[in-house]
Each structure stands twice: as structure tokens, then as C-alpha cells.
Length: 361
Ligand SMILES: Cc1c2[nH]c(c1CCC(=O)O)Cc1[nH]c(c(CCC(=O)O)c1C)Cc1[nH]c(c(CCC(=O)O)c1C)Cc1[nH]c(c(C)c1CCC(=O)O)C2
Image (cartoon, rainbow, N blue to C red):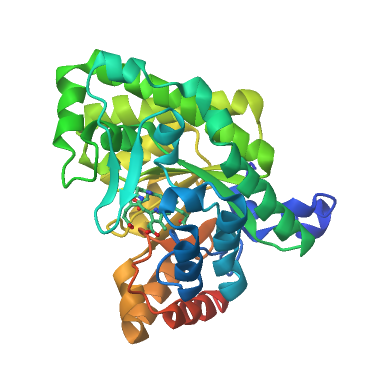
């Protein structure tokens, strides 16, 4: 879309999806009150999620059981009427689908068999992702079918991790404060690290396009650890691969909007916004929204950035933070969200209070 102000909804009614508030925002329109959803909105803070999770057994089984994964995707939509439904899966399902052994150990987070040399990286099979991730695309089909059946205005969001963040876990083998092994490899063996990133660009392109073909209406790239990089490394390992994925997607799917979330990017957000081709920028809690609005094009949407801990606290602290965000973003294409994933200790009724507050603008 060329300008902030769009034709009235009536003029575009022939395309039912255009009326969905989140898609209008991603197309550059300042819809008010803003559409909202929350990162990690399906998860352990919801008793109904914990029930299905227990039924599924382990986390990967849940991600690869289409009926159960569709059910947990829809739980926060039923409970809160969110404008966005994010596919229930995980960014590490791409390495899993390329053949890297993965498990989610209780209380320890993800554990992967690290890939640190040419043999291990060469053994990864990006061309196997679409076949191995078939149950995940089936989840997308089921969720989209359920949303369409109820003529819901909720937008179905597909996602992947960005190559850099996924590579961090693949090289390190687990979560880390600083991902020093992965970032060290990027400096010491840029050719090898580059091979891993290129493998991930291919796998991620295919994976996202398959989600779009199955019914995802928007896509999001999570780059949780982008903010650890120096500016030159950020250009090389975040902006370039993300831009490549966007160009690859555009060759096949000209229209699907993409949200990029380079967490803790700071002032590098401006270059990321200009050069990657994303329609919307996810902004983390640390970022001043007024600055972010000045750093991106007026038709580029912003999404964020309530502190997940304000949502845990609730009450006046939550209200003040949420109102400040709304006041700053009024008049711009904006999707209300958290600045990072919801905390598992979040009282579900605080989410209800937030939804009421945002809905009244
Ligand atoms: C880095 C990252 C991961 N996964 C993800 C990221 C990027 C966003 C971020 O920075 O938080 C993204 C993600 N993970 C999950 C989703 C599902 C959709 C949603 O947002 O509701 C999404 C979009 C489910 C999940 N992914 C995970 C859970 C918890 C598993 C469980 O239920 O036991 C869920 C609901 C596990 C996971 N997955 C990952 C870690 C580090 C962990 C362990 C930490 C934790 O347990 O919260 C990797």
C-alpha cells in the first residue's frame, strides 16, 4: 500500500481477508484500536494448554500432532479473541526437519547435537524440510479451516526463526547467555558459518512458503539473538540472509506480509527496516517506540512492545505501560503485542484486562 490512509473497508470488501484488522495494518493502514496478539500466547500460563501438553507427552510430539497443535493454537483465540493466531510450533523444528537431533528436556530448554564442522553442516538436508515438516503444514490447514468456518477476523501467522538465531542454537547445542561458540565461529570460520546460514536460508524459504501454501496469511521471522552482533556482523548474518529470504519468498508469493523481529537490534533497526523488505517490524521492550516510528517508513507497520513483566504485574503498572504505547502509536499502522514472549507465571486474567484496555483504544 502506498499511503497510510486506505480506501474505506467497503471498497475492498470483495476480498474477505482484506477486512481482517491485522492484515490491513500489515498493508500499511492505521487501524484503531489496533489489532493485537501476544508472542507465545499459546503456552504454559494457560491451564488448557498444560492439559493438552500433558496429553501429548513431549513437546516435539505436540508440535507434530496436527490436531493437538491446532487445538493449542486456537486456545488463546477462543479465550481472548486475539486478532492474530500464531501457528503452534517452534523455531527449532527447522533444524529438526533437516535431520539434526533435537530434544526438549524438562526444565533445561532445547538440546541439539551441535553442528560445528563441515561434515556436520554438510550432513544437514534442507531439501528434506518440506517433507519432514508435513505435520506442521497440516496444523496450518486445520487452523485456517477452523478460523474460516467461523468467519473469524483472526489472521493466521506462520513463522520461522531467522537463520542467525537458529544457527546460534544449532552450533551451541542449547540456549546460552552469549552464544559465544556460534558467534566465535562466525568470526573465525566465516566460510563455514556462511554455509550453515545459506543452508538455513534455503530451508527457511521452503518452510515459510509451505506454510503460506497451507493457509498462513502472514509470516514472522524471529531473530531473538540479533542484538548480540556488532554492526558489521549484523549486516552480514541478519540483514543479508533475511533480505535473501524475502526475495526468495517474493518470487513465489508476491503478497504475503512478513514481520521481522530482530530483537535488541537498537539503532540497527533502521537499516534492517530499509534493506530486508519486511512489511512490519517487531520491536522489543527496550526500544523507544517514538524512535522506532521515526526510523521506519510511514507505511511500515510496527509491532510490540509491552514488557512481559508489566503483564505479570497487572494493575496500574500494566495500565500505564499499555496506555503509553497506545498513545505513542495512535495514527500509525500498529499491532499491539509484547516486546518478548509471555511469561509462564502470567495470570490469564491480566491478559483479559489488557485485551479490554487495548480494545477501547
Ligand atoms: C528462541 C526461540 C525458541 N522458540 C521460539 C523462539 C523465538 C522467540 C523467543 O525469543 O522467545 C519461538 C516459539 N516457540 C513457541 C512458539 C509458538 C507459538 C506462540 O508464540 O504461541 C514460538 C513462536 C512454542 C514453545 N517453545 C517452547 C515452549 C515451551 C515448551 C513446553 O511447553 O514445555 C513453547 C510453548 C520451548 C522453547 N523453544 C525455544 C526455547 C529456548 C524454549 C525453552 C524455553 C521455554 O520453555 O520457554 C526456542
